[in-house]
Image (tube, rainbow, N blue to C red):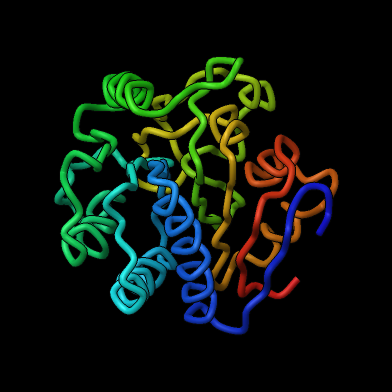
Length: 241
């Protein structure tokens, strides 16, 4: 393990999804034992669907309740919550409905309200649930990130200035994201940095170069920036390095 990250490699997306589900349920089980809440932010992406399926299957087999988990999101597209592009819809269909998650534990990003209004409401809601650190950042127990072909994480774009790494906004609006839809809401770098744990699920073809660039000491992708801001980020991947 480097000082920046722990790399865990798998042969297939299914193996990655299963291992990540097992590890997350272990975290939830620990929180349940001490009757603590577990505050998590989820991301979209193709691997997320496999991951959620594995969580549902394993949680039922292990009889682990997700009733004390507060669900947030790392980013959202500015589309209705029923749209196929909605990150909320992916989680709702793949996890909330099968496990009958209580609505009061679901703190979705309201993409349909637009970037700025949605970001403002999201920050207000997360602050009402999650405690903050000395810098005023909410401290999530765990943030899941996915990796884009260009090295983006959440909806943090590669062409943003490095100064955005120090922006204190918990959530902010995005208007010209390169990959459609262009209008989005994203969690900020400083909130990612403040989380107790960050797990990257890096999977899929076409991401090899972005993945290598992100792990390089002088990497400039959004994921590389996250790695520089933190210690001990855990990377689950089926991408050969």
